[in-house]
Image 1: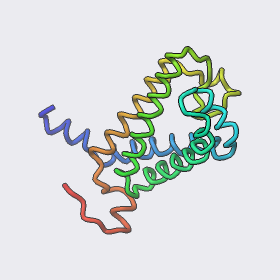
Image 2: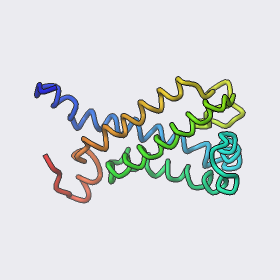
Image 3: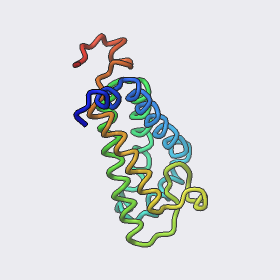
Length: 163
């Protein structure tokens, strides 16, 4: 990887913009059904048997808004690295919850993009784990290489960006 050509490609702000927008859209879309049906999402969270029941409702009310905020920030390029860090932390927690559910042998839907009623649409599996790992790596990519040249931070806040 000492080839400057590869460094230019991997560090391309246009490639990072695409990664930011894609990851942001994933989180905005994932938040939508959870915001619209928090009770259903709370049931999804409880099904993982990971959080204590007293924490389930609060988690189900707060998480979708955090996902929405992080997604919008990534799309707009507003504190994108902070949003990528938040996204990375969420992905780590989702992966831990998935490992737990798979360890318990739970036959359930992920709850990521639809409720438990859609178990045939998005069942948890090792494929879900791989998908989440890819999104985690994408968040890490944005966190480590994005320099906000293409986004609101650069345009409206007139920030100096590092080379």
